[in-house]
Image (cartoon, rainbow over all chains, first blue to last red; front, side, top):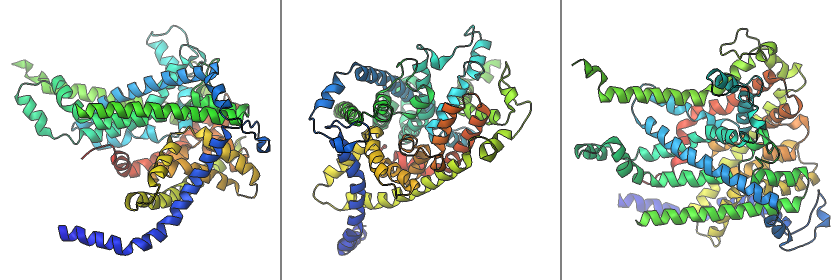
Length: 302
Length: 238
């Protein structure tokens, strides 16, 4: 084996110049395309551009950022996003784990089931929004119909126009769409656990619940954390569902942080302000990620 | 010993199948619903009780949206596919080279660049849309489709090709900011139009939703093994 690896590295070294020539221009191009808008929008956030009038750019330092953090509407949208992120990630983690546990078992049609479960995640968010909008229709929606038949509600409710229900249903639509993402990752983690561990525990008298908490949970910590972090960032940046389902909800009950940024950018054309909002959201995302990583490191040391 | 039929193992099996069924119904019912909605005549859709099994079947809605009616989905669909294909190619090509560079070559500042890419992915897309919107307002010569392809590739450049396709077919916000000409609409945009302009014709809406779903879904079903591998490659420690 050693000679094989050595050969591989020799190949690397002798061709490294060729490789560098091939890769560098592409990499530069990628960096350029990615970096340019990043820097552009970053600089925007320190300006005072309204509408498409870039020539009127003035450098105003942290003015926009101060405005952002003292804007009650921004704070409100952050709280709404926080609520959204918290509930969706939590639900997706729990549901995702439960479903992954089920999909780990052997049963007829398991492969098909595993393939089918990915489909909601592959559906364009706009379509997901329209699907749920139709099912939640206040006059002829199937959900209203079923709930009334089951006696859970007395009269049809216009869910997405009700302050109490708008957010929960946006959460539901997101959970429906993105739980498969969690399921895939967690299932992959579950599959790395060897069966003999469970057999040994069984012989020692451990029940199903005990096995889960003592064997399963510790060993899928990493997939759980990864899906939680990714899921959190995706939820913070979620836009399409909010736009299609509620456009900010009755009043601004479902105006998430990103929707708030969008409104400022393309509804009111406060382009610099919107840039500052976006970078503030990024800042918060980074802080949350740091918190996640710190917790993860600490749990690994234990 | 009649109780032998209901062994604990049997019971667990029954529970497993039960919950699996509920789960699959939960995740798949909406698809069934939009398909059946899209093939029913409009008057039946607004009847007092919804039909779980359609009484009459018509393909009128599809005819409407593909040319006859007020909104033409065919163009949007074609555009979406073109964009998705182009974005995927761009993603794969750039992705391979960039990934290779980061993995093999140690050049000064590679860490910073990598962090930059991560930030680009974490940043709310709105921030990147603003520069694109401004830049493309000035570049009138650039083809409209190109205007969509470049910004849509942006988040995808860090991901793998298959996921790229799925995401780019779903890409909505970017396209909405940049394109407001019907001729070059992509599918999600056209669908969103239904929301604002035609608040009642859910037959048409669901028909276009079905068309919009078919491509990513089929694509995902074919490539699902690779998707799973791609998603979990970094997530599972060996």
